[in-house]
Length: 136
Image (tube, rainbow, N blue to C red):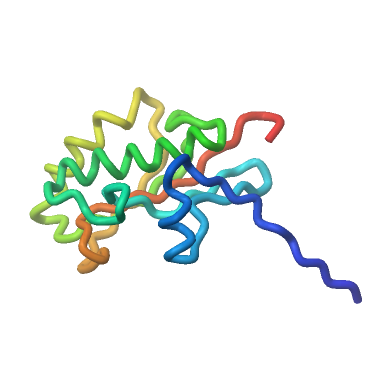
């Protein structure tokens, strides 16, 4: 029996590689025509959170869009979304209002939004799966 080690086809957005190396994970991995993007939070370049929830959501989408762009995608290529919100009873409406700025037009991707109790100092995180452009 032969075993082979596959190499992950990792996508790094511009200017964020040091954070990913420090925390030891890939921002996104291409596999079988799909792009699997790690959860993105509203972190500034130094990794600290934006203090305001709506600013966190916008920054999370900016970070997400940087990864999508590095892979040749846009949010229109996203097919599956998971959004984590701390204290959703309090934060959902405010966060979702900011999400709408980035969501685009129908048809929308599917979405799952679990409420959580902890996101390492953040209140919002978004993780997606996108369809890569044909040829990737």
